[in-house]
Length: 297
Image (cartoon, rainbow, N blue to C red; front, side, top):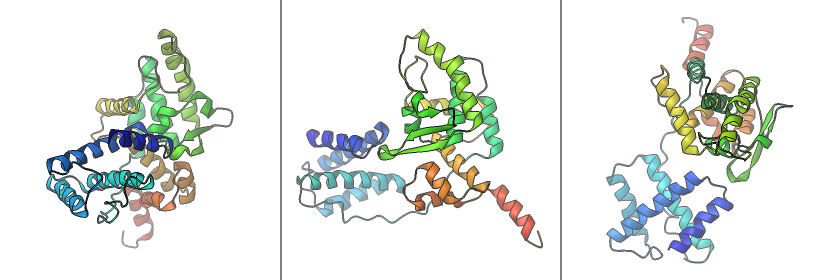
C-alpha cells in the first residue's frame, strides 16, 4: 500500500502539477478511508465491493461532514483507484459508479473596494516584513494569482519593463498577467527595503520573490498567516483566505466592464464554465442599475 500511495503522490506532483497542500489533503483522505476499512474488518483495499463504498459514504454523512468535504474525499479516492486501474493493479474502479448530487454553487466571497482600502491601510509599516506584506497584498489583488503561484513566483518571472508577470499555474500551465503600477511600485520598494536586507542578514541566495522572516522562500501556510494577521489588525469583521483576493480580482474586473473571456484568461481557467461563477455582481452595482432603470425605484 505504501509503495502505491507514494507512486500516486508522485504522479499527482509530476503529471498533474498539484501543490504540496493538495497532495497532503489526498493523503489525509486516503488515511481516513483505510482506517474505515480496517475498522469494518476489510483491510484489503484492493478487494473493495460497491457495498463497502456505499458504507463508507454513509459513514461520512453520519459524521456530519459538509457536502463539499464529502465530495472532495470521494474524488480523492476515485482518482487513487483510477490510478491503480491504469497501472493494472485492479480490474475495476469501485468508486466509478458512485455519483453524488451536486450542491448549489455558492457565490464566491470577495472584498468590496472600500474593504480593500482598509486592508491596504492596515498593511502599512516601515519594517522589512511590512514591505513584504504590502507587496503580497498588492500582487494578489492585481493579478488574481493562486497561493501556490505566489509561493513559486521568482524574480525572473517579473518583467517590470512591460509590466507583466509570468505565473506557473495548475498542471504547470503558464500564463502572462499584467502587473499594475501599484503592484510594481510596491514590489520595487519591498525588494529594496524588505527582501534585500533580510536576505543579506541571513546569508540567503535564491530567486523566490516572497520570503519569510528568515529570508527563505515563504510557504503557503506563511501566506495564509500573513493575511490572517492583517484582518485581525484591521477594523474588518470578516475572515480572510488568500483565494478571496482572487475572487475579488475577478469580481472587480467584471463589475468595471471586463468581459468573461478576458477574466478566464487572466485567472488561467481551462473552461469558461469555471469562470462563470463570477458573473454575480455586487449589491452596490445592483442598486445602481435598479435606481437607473426601474421606473418606481
